Image 1: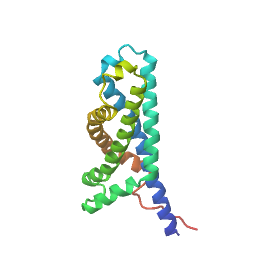
Image 2: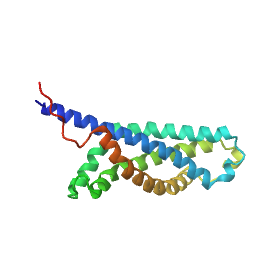
Image 3: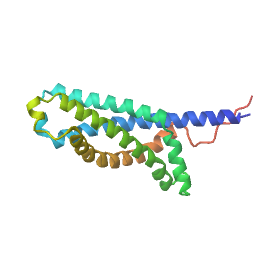
Length: 186
């Protein structure tokens, strides 16, 4: 016989596992993509930097993004929010509409929070490494941050949403969420 309380606990654990796996996948992408966009936008600033500096920039960005993503996954029930949104819209489970609505909160929340923190961190770090004479000719911290954030966030949000639409069904199936619980006998 199946214990109803155990089924609820297993579902919550699976939802959390889906959120964490999706957070890691999306965070790796966002960490890489943010550096790619910034380097593509300002190639002159990175032209004279040694190759190891570029590698470290990508590495630290991805690690920072993963840490933030996991914290978000542990703090916010994104899987539950997505399912509630899909059910409220009367989407049929396993339909494209259901998947599209279910992954929307995850993509939006992760992109906004990770993008904001990473752009703040990136601008702060960049300004710390600039000589005073260069800083004198730069816009304020908040103007630089907003410029960076507004440039990367909309593009990253669209890409993360498409990525989550593609990846989420595989992760959900891999974790076993949405399947009827196995009947075991005592």
